[in-house]
Image 1: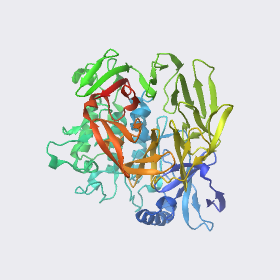
Image 2: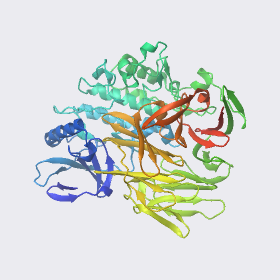
Image 3: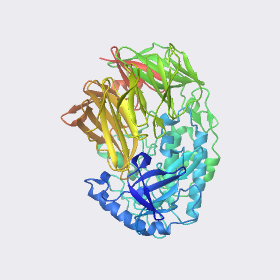
Image 4: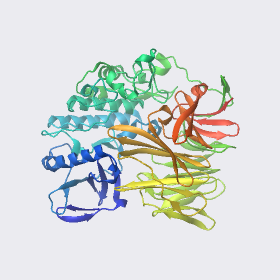
Length: 622
């Protein structure tokens, strides 16, 4: 792609891509700069999408004036346009350059337990929001409104919160026309709709509403309208997307609170009361800074929960007594027998199973231990370190390097490509697989064996027992591929319809014959979960998109033959395919006490292993 900056031609390569959203692609430009290029109506992501093409045309037209009038006095935490990117004649604006905030993470991940567990405490979250509060206050002071304020346009570096996507800010008669359903103020929307549809423009109060939504998500790992609404009268049931419009929050007695979330009683009375007034009673004010400044967090020595009260509300007010069952304890519920295999006060961070055995790695008090309690290394948890298990070996990947720790041999090191902040490697029973310099490699008899070429530092992949799957998306380029676990060459003829939005997460589950590929997209202000059933020869047999409980979490699913087992807060469900349609074929409600949406499932000749954050159960379902 050729563009011009101050009359100088710049050629952008797909390998420079560092971000891809619904409206623009972002590339790295030198050491500390980035360049944002707006998608044109003929962008490949908009193929067959007439509404998106029309919106792109209108957006580009408005930017010709809006970016030339952009405020120059915004706070330093706002990543603002610096130099306009144009066509050769310098007349048509195509994008802009901006400072690059390196080694930062989107705020979205601070609301995910898996990302934060053992690494980022609530005191850190509090400091992040104190910083964000100060920036938002300054923005409003100069008459600017963020508008589409959400956890993807906040970048966190340490405890500093930076605001990006500033080109959508609202100022000087230029309105923000986009919104994110999870964060939009319902007072601006049509209450009779089945999902949020804006009828009024964003304002300062709606910015603070979004601030409150993000704060709750990051402190409790649940949004104000999370959980499952199960009214006693079936006639009162409404779509999940309409709950904010009807103010049906986690405080509603007919909402089942998510099992992986932190109970809201850990918050101070004042903060809890504020959330209740905002989400239940439509109170709109500037978020009181004192609610953040007066929070004092402590960790309960009994149950380990972080709370902002004088005494632990779970052990005292709710009369919850932590139960410690002996290993081997069996619990029978209906047709399900659950045997406790392992439990820890630390965190289980990796597991790998076969039909004959299960291996796991857990972290406790600064030590990383295997299932036989052998210490493999010491140190702190890090959200960007990846672990894989291969028999006795423990593979640790971080910052372009993978170290294989095996009790029977010396440590082995591999240089590995990153994709974002994650090193790209995987294992199965026969080999290690990794990316390096744009090549997909595998262990061979004489060293690394070449499998095929991919896009350097833009590719993600996974491998099963028989074959693997991967993809890369950068700028105008989107490629998906499969490869044989033992052979050479990649098959990149399959077409995965990722969509035009921003990719949030992705994962895979493999059986011998199938790959179940899951991905989450932010599209037109909504988060949509997708699943593709892919055969080993690269055919897409079925596609599914939705927000069903079995798709709530992309990780941890168990593929067996032609079906899939998934953990949900209501128990395990079995998903099957009929022609090209995926559907829940069977539910196992008696497994509910032993699993939740975050449980990882592994098959066994004796049953099914359920691996949660601190426990492992062997489940037998008759």
